[in-house]
Length: 383
Image (cartoon, rainbow, N blue to C red; front, side, top):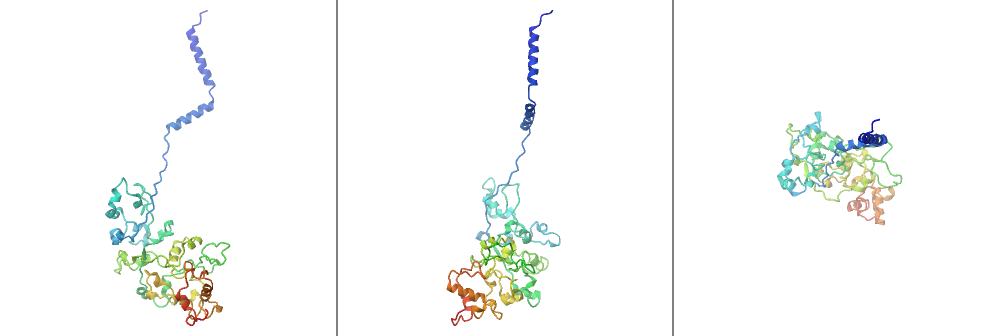
């Protein structure tokens, strides 16, 4: 027998130990190692970057430096005029914010003083501040498209639109031609629900906006440009913006509108909120209510003297609530006149609020026009 080589024996023993070690490795451990190795080598997906939202900033046309000729900033027509309105509805119009070149005329320092423009300037038009994210806020024109955006809900234009009613009356023939342009907004019609939105169970005699309260007015340029088209030769032409758009001069507190009341009644329709903000006499008057539908518009509204840039010219005198029918102003309070009753209540209780007709004006002192409209006011007899 040949002697065993000690070197070969040691090598064989080592080999057996390796095999034994491999046999006792748990399969789960092997399975866990491979995916982990793959995760280390596979690149992680880059998270989607949200453009930074700039600080809010409002552009004011009221600023003296911004009271320039419209063409200084706005190009007529905008490049997208036939995109925002298409087909036969497309009309040359200003339908987009001014381009950067208009801003640079005055704000070059802010644009180039840093690595990028001051974010607050960008926020006037842009949703985010980044060179690659160019989305802008919706432009207020066309109104039809703008009203579909959340931004329109509480938008208040810096301009009042001048529209001379007296120059247009002859276009609509004789009689009560107001209905050619003004219709009842959100009418109740034959429906049983008289309110614009669901009322709370405990409303009682509290105020809640009713359907058919307001009348519509033409909005946007479509109706105007049907006659004042660029090729019609009729002045003013569509590019003469300043003829109709005039800076607001109305002072705060001259309308019977309360933002909290509008929020409480959950009225979100931009057209309704826009018209409601213009109510300068009685916020609760309902055109579709009672016998109002049988009264001609000119019975209450003096159309020939109406100046759409002056809200006071549209104010309806309280005497129109009386007259021959005497609906709300009667010979005595016993005959049911609403004005008689509320003036009498205020005389006996200074905290009484005149909520039959008013919201913001409800707690205001009774104006002389109301007191003098009551029968017997000059003689001092009871209302």
